[in-house]
Amino acid sequence: MDPLAPDPTERLARARADLRMGVPVVLRDGAGAALVLAAETVTPARLVALRALGPGAALAITAWRAETLKAPAYDGDLARIALPPDAGPDWVRQVADPADDLRMPMKGPFRSLRDGDAALHRAALRLTKSARLLPAALVLPLAHAGALAVAHDLTMISAAAALDANLSPLRAVVSARVPLDLAESGRLHIFRPEDGAEEHYAVEIGDPDRAQPVLTRLHSACFTGDVLGSLKCDCGPQLRGALRQMGEQGAGVLLYLNQEGRGIGLANKMRAYALQDQGFDTVEANHRLGFEDDERDFRIGAAILRRLGFGAVRLMTNNPAKLARMAECGIAVVERVPLRVGGTAQNAHYLATKAAKSGHLL
Image (tube, rainbow, N blue to C red; front, side):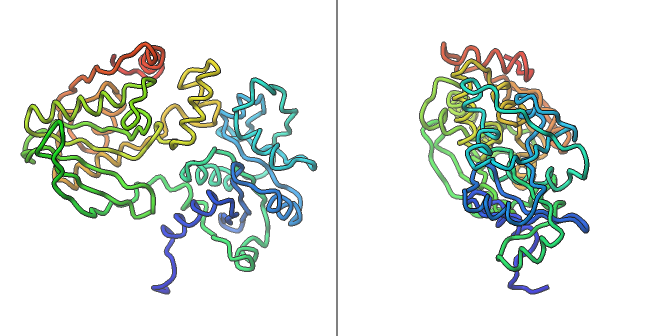
């Protein structure tokens, strides 16, 4: 292998970046291959160029988005909507983005494809999700896609790489002492995934005994709550409440995982907020966007705990899913420590939804 050439993991990072900028990528699966454009970033010129390559382009959307649009999802977890001859970038984005669903409820009729393999479409959707874009992609199967990638200098990756559910190895970058208002004996550890995704952080309070269960909080990044003090969620109070309790006890580890908006990214989280303003709850908003209830990967937290030398925790959470994920990853949860803070008049419905639909123990 050429030591100067990108390896499959590095090509995956390139593919995500390309889609975010509106550059097409090529996905291959065995003898098949396809040109892929993210629906959110498609441009008029590139859509025209895609059409010129031949017929058969489809807009892949998740089953959740298809349910909202009343489009049959013959492939189970996704629908392949045939691209109409006169459809432009605005049509593509309107199908992908639910922002105007209530104003323009009749977007169809749609023709969902039944025949053919949906593996490349499934990989394309996974790739758009990991790029923190709307989960919708234009996919054009092409026999000569490999040659096309070479001719136009496009990133080409395997569908298996796009679908890979394995956790990217984390590399410890640096740690340094950071005295905190709520815990002066703070130390911040930075961990960087090898696949080019967002870095994650561990805030270590004091000098916890690695042989004993450590007071731990898995906290997902929340720019609006943690930084801006948003009243729509309880994230900021939970962050500060956990650090305060760790400071009072003299030891603890807060994992700050960059999985904003339950793993859909800040832009999509704001799209969900806009849908909530239309009357949908947090779970319904995610589904209308095409996402699952929760797209986070808590294996990241377990991996960081092991890198820090911990095997058992007293987990500060109201979320039973976190308890289950830690146990599945080999981290013993000897105690659940409730963290009931941050209720406001503005987030009462949000908290009730978390309890009713996500099983949070509030």
